[in-house]
Amino acid sequence: MTRYFNIFLTIVFILNFKAYAEEVFCNDATIEDPPFYISDEYRQGDKIWENLRDIENHSKVSEYIPRGTIVHAPIELSEVSYAPNYRIPVEVVSVPSQEWENDIKGTNRSNQRRRFRHTALTPKGLDRAKAGSKGFLDRRALMPAGKFTFFVKNTMPLEKTPSGRDYKGLPLTLKMQGDEYVGQNCCELSDEPQCFFKYTFQALSKDQVVLEEFNINPLACQLLEHIQPVPKRKEIDSAVLNIMAKLGEEYPGFGIGEGIETDDIKLSGIRYLPEHKGSSISRIHRDYMVKIPLDPDTDKGPYNSFHYKPDDDNSSDTYLQPESLCAFTEVLKQFNKKCTGAGCQVQFGNFYHSPSWNTHKTHGSGHCVDIRPQRKNSDLDVSLNYNTTNTGRYSREKTKDLVDILVKAGGSPIYFNDKKIKGVTPLARHSNHIHVCFKPERQKVKDACRKGL
Image 1 (tube, one colour):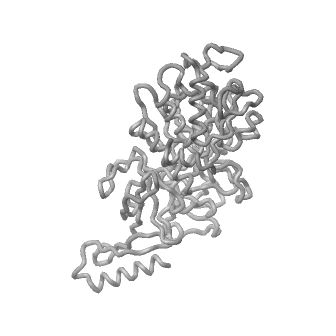
Image 2 (cartoon, rainbow, N blue to C red):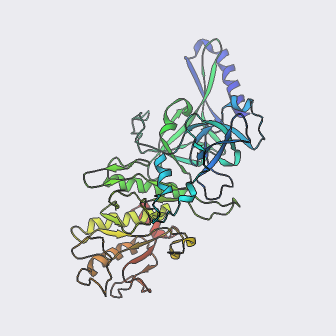
Image 3 (cartoon, rainbow, N blue to C red):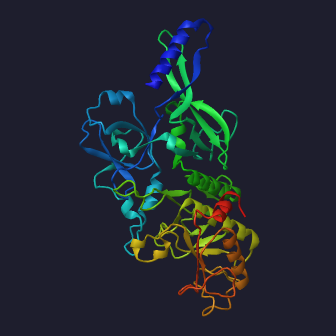
């Protein structure tokens, strides 16, 4: 209702002052309706998709639509809708990359543990929704755009914002005033004025400071085809922004969806795993997580790191909650500065492991990482026990330096059996690896992520 009243006032103003107006006239306004929606799921359990029902027959499922798809609800579709009021007719604007979905599916090899494969498996015979697909979604599977932050991908054809900032990698949010969207009502002057609403977007720094505001009609430009929506929550926003900033320093051009390739490494972009809400909706079984960027061919990670013994070919055991991954990324960054040469590669193993997998039950929080002890002069992918095997290769000095950085970054508890290293606690079966957790509520973890060490 607010939208149409504002447009009415704009038309009245134009008709009264047409002689003095420009070709397009705009006035500041707010509006209740979001410019678009992000698809979620409703009672699909741990699936990363929702049913898209046939536009001609809402009782028939025609395609599956991945979570994180950008859709809008055209008025013309609503006017011809005969579906129950809990189903909304939508048109798909853009979908997440197929690589993201394939990564979650993991490998098809029978001897590999496909940890998240079940979340991406879809009913046989259903095609994946694509841009231009139309159908019905349960309104409870639609999230308004105001609840998200949007990262501009490197594929964005427009290079600069109106003030000249580089679009690529830039985080954007929609400006809100209470529950309404801020923007402008605009009308093109003609015999029959055509009116539309321009929404105000805010470009943010990594510290979530507004750098710039600009007004656009997002459905009338290419922006929505080149953005990655991320749930707009203060901690997630801050963590993802800072992960991007840290990796961007070491690997210029690193993108949210696209990685980077150098002479030494080919890093994937940031992959994400949606939260598992469960059938009760109000209960979160698994929080939103992100995956550390890795070279899929060598298992090398950022800042001279290496992922050993992956659970499967797609390393589905390398997801952490965003704040935890951000702090761990800072640890890798700082240790890489301090330790150079042979024996300085940080070799990490499992991150998140669901307790239901019956392997690493202490990794169910999405906060914890396993790390091998440091070596004296070799970066070989070989297990190293600090006191019983390969003792001539174990470097207590380098391991101590790593533990010192883990402590500064808020790592706690830190389990490792070398009692000569301050800051660790002995625990059975922890002679060949360090177990450390970065709990997001710890101030040191927050500081390591946001401010660095």
